[in-house]
Length: 507
Image (tube, rainbow, N blue to C red):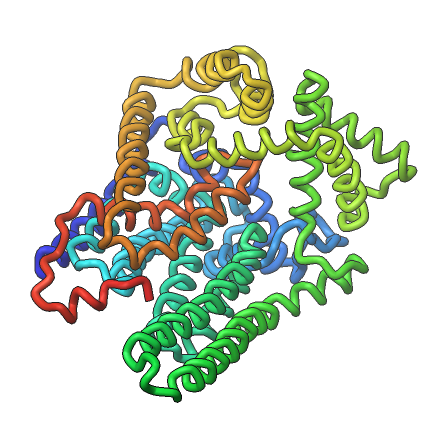
């Protein structure tokens, strides 16, 4: 236990040092590092500024503020905290107290994620050394280091996810309602941070229901073996026990979903009031149109993604008449209909694009665009002049043109990297390859059985990434992969007693 404490301390110190080094590398200005790697960051800053100064959830730069329903409110509220502590009128131009405070909060979150990984490992029954090793791997992860210092939702989303999984895991053993209620609230906050988590509560509810039925089946099997035919009350007791567990499973699952809905309800009602539609976010329709539908059309017609998006807009106007872009709900609903038409006309091609994006998000060591920005390379610069490299690469992969896809990545993303960036990329490749191999090996070890239920969120976030995929969207599962990898990288604990051996089951 003492060695595990030292390992955790090393993880926290190493994680903080790596993140500070990344911020202090003079290749790019501080504001560029924080805001430029993803296009979402300036939008979140505008939303936070309008919340504080304009009392409106809007991306408009001046009143009258039009309500925004593309983004969800939790991360802008998080950014509003440092805004309340600074009186600077200029939020982004250096020196910006707001940016320094916001990044400092994210650094604290990234250290909390290291500690939460340790706590989740201990809660799942891992040895302290294995849990501390998983925390160290999280601190060393280049992908997590990069997104710890950017104003995107990843760090807040990941910390909420780990807390939710920790509460759900604790409920598995305690069966106390307060953990379940807190997990439901956590699910609601997750969805209001990133809508991609919208089906995660349903998955957890099904798992909780399955836990009750599995426990009933195990209990009944033991009763049957112990009492056999000599005890006529065994079938009756088994039946009542099974029915009671079914009832508890349904009640617990319903409670989890109800708590999630209570958190989501005010936001959905607000969107109904401002848009006339009960919707959580237009992000779903946006992704169907701008990514899945557009990529499918672009791959089918061998055209650039930008032209495919223009063609989708033209088809939408031809079918539904002039579109009002100021009405976000109706506009993206119509665009999504046209996007789904493209997907339904080429279902196999759309499935290939979705699978390629999901696999790419899992296998890519870190975002090349982010690496270029931190290295001082203009994020819009491209030696081949090809916009939308990630989407173009998915097109080529879906059509089976692996060679041209790799050539495109090299020409437009890797060829201009400075030497330091190449070293970081090589480290990221080796780290991520070792992490995936160790995590895969752990699936065949008996001592990782307590972790197997974490495959549910891992598979969920891998499969729902789709054509939007890049290393950024692997952030939610990376600590979970580190837990699996730590099991494979540590020795099996000794089993001093039969009681300890019998307690190593899944539930």
